[in-house]
Length: 102
Image (cartoon, rainbow, N blue to C red):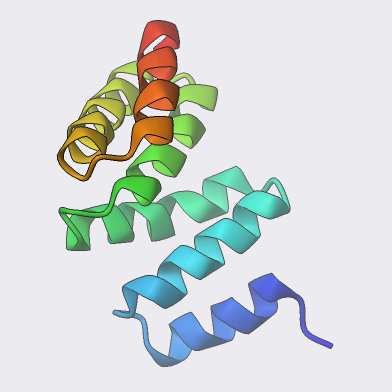
């Protein structure tokens, strides 16, 4: 049986412009602590969906762990704006806490 990374990796190879496949692959990579490999897929999602909050949060967290504080703060601020616009209270609280760390 294929792992989630293998499964979504195959789907991304078949449809490289599919943001949902890219996001699912990124999540699978993150679950295996393969942070650097997840970055390009999260970046793709962020670049292609201006209204998608979760990839911004995940990418921001990875970049923060990599010491890329300015980039993570920009993503957290974008995600916070989306959380407020979309009335997502839990992510709003999490992002405010993350911005305190960033």
